[in-house]
Each structure stands twice: as C-alpha cells, then as structure tokens.
Length: 544
Ligand code: NOJ
Image (cartoon, rainbow, N blue to C red; front, side, top):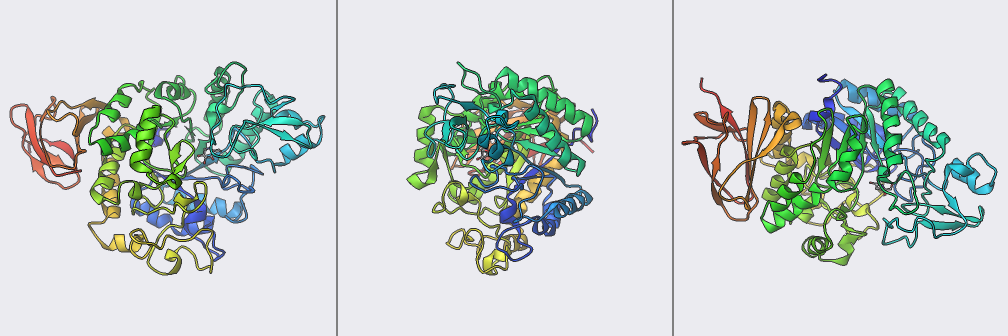
C-alpha cells in the first residue's frame, strides 16, 4: 500500500482553534500568521497534521460552523494569502493541514440563504429545505437540546418554515438539489487547489431528510459521499476526508463504505468509555465497545480523541451511563451542555498527572490515529463561566507573561485562564518545556515512540490474557511480525499481574519503549507490578 497516500494511517493529529492559538497583530484574536509562528512548536511536538476549526467568514453564532462565505477567510484570522503562507510553511515542516468543511448547513447570512428567503423563484430557494408546516420529519431528534425547540423555524420573509439540525441561524442545505451537490464539490476544489490536505467533514449524518426516518445515515447520504470521494481521488489523491458522524460503531463503519467513502472517521463511542473506565477503574467498557466495532478496510483509519472543542458528548452511551457520567464528571450544572460535559481533559481528571498520562497512553495505543486538542498537551484548564462551549476554547497558554504570551492586546477574545490551579502562570508551554518530567515531555515522548512503531497505525488489536482483566487493560498491537504489548493499570492501587505472552513475545527480555526499562518473561508469561494509573509499552528484545 502506498505510504504517501496512506499517510493518515499513522499520523498524529492536532486540533487548532485558530482564534485561541497565537495573535500576530495584537487585536486580541489568534490568526493564521500567529499559527505560522507556532509551526516550529508543533513540528517539535511531533504533530503530522493540523485540523483547523472553521476559518471562513461567519457571523460566529456557532463559532464559524455557521459559514457565510465558503471561499474566504474570516477577517479576524487574516486573508487567503496568509492561508497560502500557512500551507507552504506547514508543508516545509512536513505538517499537513485540514480544515472543517461544513457541508450540512450554512449561516442564515450566507448570500444563498439571503436570496432564497427573499424570493420564492430565486434559484437559491431550492438550496434549502422549506415547508409550509413544521410537522414534517418529526422523527428527527433535536441536537442542540438546550437552545432549540424544533428543527423548523418560521421565516417571515420567506413565509415558510426552514429546516435546521443545529442552531436556527444554520439552515440546512438541500442535498436533493444537484446544484447544492455540485457547489460543495466546487468549494472543496477551491481549497484543494490551494494546497490543503483534506477536510474534517462536519455533521455528515444529516445531509438528507426523509419522512419516516430519523434523518441520519440515510442511503442517499452514502451515495453522495461516494461521489465526493471519487471527486477527491481525482483531484487530491493524497487528501483526506475525515467524517464527523457521532454514531454507534456499526453506523460509523458505513461511512468507510468499501474503502470508497470517507478515509477516516472519528470513533465517538470509544471516547466516553475511556473516561468511564478511568473512573470505574475497570477496562470493560473499552473492551466491549472495541469488540462491537466492525473491522474497517485497510485503506481506512479511525480517529481517536479524548477531548475536542465541543462538549464531551454522551450521545453514544445509554441513558443510565449518561447520568452516571454527569454525576461523576459534571457535578455542577454549569458543567453540562446538551447531552454532554463542557470541560477540558485535565480538570475532568482532577488534574491528576498520572491519570492524564494514562488517558493519553490509551489514546496513543488503541486503534486509530490520535487527535490532540490544543492545550491538552500541557493540561490546560477550562472556564465553565463562559457560555456555550467557549469554556474549552480559551487562549493557549504559552508562558507566564501577560495574556499568557498569546496576545499583546489589552483585551483578548476570551479571558486567559488566571485562576489556580490552571492559571497561565503555572500551566504554560515554556515552564513545561523546561521541566523534563512535565506532561508536555511525556506526551511528546509518547508521540515519538508511537511514530517509531508501525503496529500502531497499521496493526491489529489483540487482547492479552491476564489475571487482572478489569483493573489492567492489556493488549497487543500487531502488524505482520511486529508486536508491542500495551499494559494499562486503570486502578488507583498498584497491581501485580501475570500476562500470557503470545509467540513473538517469548524473547529473553521485553523493553518498555517509554522508559527503556526491561523485564524478563518466564515460561510463557510476564509478571508485572504496575504503580497506580501507570502503563507500559513493551516490545520484545531480540537476542543480540
Ligand atoms: C459539529 C461541530 O463540532 C460543532 O462545533 C458544531 O456546532 C456543529 N457540528 C454544527 O456545525
């Protein structure tokens, strides 16, 4: 299989909120040129691909996921020349760039919608989904439960209702209209021609609406996505489409098609189960969901993550599990949003360094390409007093100078976190770079080690038999004759466990890739004592 075309299979991704990252012109908003200044940092961390949240012109009622012009750059972030420079500078450092492509909807400020609502006979009217009643498609759920009462909103100017799966300021596009289908391809081509390496395709389960269905994962959606992929293969054979489909494994599996649909898909269900497993000190939820996950074609890859710019979504758990997760991880109501939890990784895990690293050990060793959320590599905190999901989108903390070195402005787009224990004076990149034992250095080392071993991107997962199956989640990652044994102690107590070794591990010694310490197998087993919340990445040492 061609390594270049399949670069995403063993890439480490990093999600950037451009507004939060680095402000180059002192206006209080991070921008593309600021991000260019930080590419050396990202290269040094070991990142292969950046995912930029939407950078298009937008009224920002959903932080850019409400696009007003698909071919421009929001003035806060710079302009198209800055974007071209970013791509060129990133590529020089072997970093690829993908950005969000919001296919399902536009902003109500988009000229298409403005024309559509004005005039029933406009060619743009049929770009959206209209109705004289608000009773159609009643089986479709409401996603932004805390703010929206219906997926239909009455438009005075149009004298009809329009359909929207998200905020009412985000009318859904009508994919039954071939012109809409073509527009999206043209827009993608516009960015691909500029050198972008692909897209994170937002909200794809909802492209079509059909009466009597819940309007998710419809066959029509898959048909269209296959066309998008064919177009992509023709125009950008090394580009990727990363699907955002917050669905159960068997439904997400469909987005890979026969390897002819999306290249990658987020594995949403595994994420909350990592948090469940850590709290319960029991790996069963992770094991069960991976056992329920169908195999995927060789030319596809899962994307795994711990946190992102949204609430920690609890859609892919049972109702009982959701309530348990809320009780455990979001005891204050302000920490909850829709069906999720709006907190960052470090505060969720009680700022316990061992636990944060253990969560990352899972992220970097379970099947899929990992995505880090900006700031989680240093354990940034959140600000639950900000509205919507803004509490997890605060400025990146670079150093202990004013505004955390993020901006020279008097006022930044959102306050920098200044309260202990997550204040920028104590949690910042500079201080962690100076401390060899920091979160940053451990994560950097995990990235580097992961990238040395093909098993992580290309290999199978095989459970390792051991006598502490709940507390200790142990698995092999295996690719051809290469093997790594991952052992995670999920418990707050030290655990001694005996792990059965498979052929290939029966060497005189096993070495932990992260610490270089060795252990010795005896008669087909290895006996290990793991401190609380610790992990080993063991590789067989061949004699000689
Ligand atoms: C998913 C994005 O992650 C989220 O931030 C956004 O609000 C919705 N899609 C709507 O575009």
